[in-house]
Image (tube, rainbow, N blue to C red):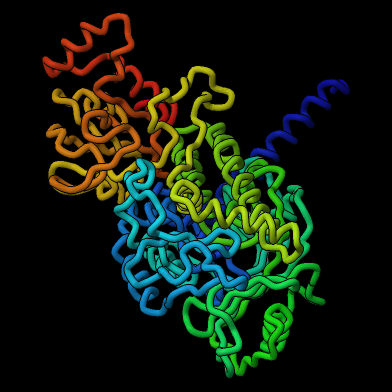
Length: 594
């Protein structure tokens, strides 16, 4: 045997052994996806994967659900995500209970009423605050097209994080998702065709690994993904406590040279922000003395807290974003991908959006009808939103400071937020109704996948589309997958989508009764101009983003405008719409199954 022949034989045997190991790993693989972290983001992601047909389990280092005081509400995209999965009634019930505990906000420390202070009442619209300046719902232009197009889930905004986690845990359990508590991730190896995960309970072999394990993510660290950003300069606390002398505190947000504190809206709830202070041990549990000390320093009083009635939290303005949301078969979502100050609960909502975006895409890759390149759009679509939230919270830190320059800036911002336009702008940003994702490019590495068109709805969250039977399009999305609304008289869009019937649910509504905004006879609001300009066809991705839309007048700019008008009047759908729908389906729903 020659040396060349011997070397070739060794290479063949080596390749064979590698193949055997690869197949062995496949056989030993327990699940398609392992999600690390059983907070709201991890649970929502696991549920979306289960809806897509993937096998998934969740590993959580805590032995019990986290009961710490965190975000107290959700934005409209998160509420609408719950709505699309049939969870709106449960979320509305949580809001009703929450509103029973909420009292009015009080004035600012300088004696002026902060925007919206004192106007909160059970049942009032949820507006939020910017740097402690509460936004007055009476100043908001609720007829603004973006706000008017998203009202159906408005009764599910005040859902605290603890209750949201419990709601999502039940949802995931119903879908067959198992949560293994008390399991800590200690190592990982991306083998190219799967991930070997070392845990405190033994080795787990999985197809994909997603870290939803918070700002100190073990998954991110073990995967070697960078986490650039800015270091913390403040420390904040949230707590619900028994206050022996509440008369010493001012209701609402109060500024002082030492920082900021808030008392309310429910009795005993306190929050503080101190500048230039860092705790000795950030990982240590928050004590009653620690919260009381911070409150005394910031308020300048000797107020006494006698007991804590909820697990308090400590936070900072540590602001960072992962260098990549994906590294091979390891992905990040939620705080594992981005951290920032918790103003307005934006982190929870940003993470929920991550989960909705990633869930259907990873599920599609596992189902075999989408290329892995689809996963690259997770980073490109979610990163800009994450960067915006980081800047939105950084701006609030600048306004909150106790120095003279920040106080002057705060006065100017307060004046702007005291106007109709300023308040409406801030409410739209906080509520998330004006979010738009750039879908103008094709899929990475696949130039054959055309952009999704330039209709005003493309890249936006689907508005409240009411149907002639008084249902909404969202009511048809409880099982996941794509939704297609077809309002053509000849059903052309539904026929086109029938080749994707295993992925796309078509909903026909040829009555043209109420394009958006409310049931028959109800109010109508639309980002595309109400009933006359309402969409005739809408393709909605599983994450709620509009992938394609078509209106009656979309063909008017074509050279053959007269022919288009004739087709519309005769009930024959314009070929422009059919061609655009086919392109969007190929781009996002893959090759037809039939």
